[in-house]
Length: 504
Image (cartoon, rainbow, N blue to C red; front, side, top):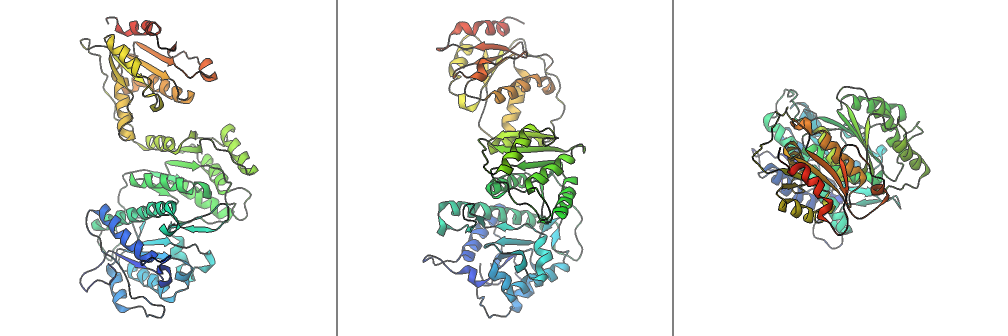
């Protein structure tokens, strides 16, 4: 894997690196670049379903000339992966490798193919913007890159993703490696349909939508990467796809340009206030929220704002920003505010990006089948509803329960199907939140959109232990409210049962 391929055997990917970045640490026999190379080949080949040719110059030395054998391969390369560090940017030969690759791509359609860059910037060690040689500034600014490090919020020092620094660093290394491999696999698959040639390929239609995923402060960078990964894997384009300028007016103009192209804007807001651009008085997070709110009204455009459950910022600026997001209608304009775990954000996000189902033909109930009860519960109450299921089944009802296995799309589809067919709905309000109950009641109200010709014959919310103020105050005009005693009594459920067990 490490030697240049033989003539007539072109490689797919070339790894450019500085020899100092491949020095083994802690008695290891393998350097960081060697490990990255081997791991990338394995993961990339898995994603492609076949062996992918990835190579680098294993004989690289500080005084080596750029070998002609390397340069001859560049016109046939599909991608260049640069392992960037301060040493890399000071190496004449590393800089020349990038320059030669740029020259080669000019004759084969350019560095980008259908907006996908053939240049991959893997940042092993952070560097200052002024360290980038003038010849590379434009190319480096055209891609976001993959950071294999994070900044320690306490000390401000970078922590590299390497197994020498513990299991958590190792886990983050493999997560980021997957990002590189996945994006490379998408490029290589695209270039199979657009072979290297002198003409630039025409724009291919996208299968997904375009999402503006707002830049975050350092405390939510990992969560942002998770969301980005999920979006990309589902075929959506994610903006910004290149670094944004850090001067206030230029930053705002770049964000507006991105938002013009987007169907959805997503904002992740955490504990830290984050970077304030030059000539600005507000953080990146605040500025992006204001600009995205101003874009509200564009056809087909919506927003999501996510605040982690239990968020408690200490910076007074962030405290004020979070309070505005929670209370100020202008800050929330056009947005759905989600204060929950990250998985809830993903669920809502994917629901918004999923095309609406085709119109459903009305379904008439079969009078010969037993009445169907839909017993809806949160996963935390899954075991607690067993006695209810047993009771209704023993009384002659068919019982369908909430499902939690499978992907979100399958679970949502099953939920809609049962709402379409059931004769009665019972929402179990136990350890779940009031907000969860409200969402389920709304689902019941929307059931005619799934093809129902009439509402369920009975619908109720069963209030179960533990007791709290929300339950004591719970009232609704859309469903009957049943207060379940402890221990459970059949008599408390019998009036509800009779509403849908009686003959039609």
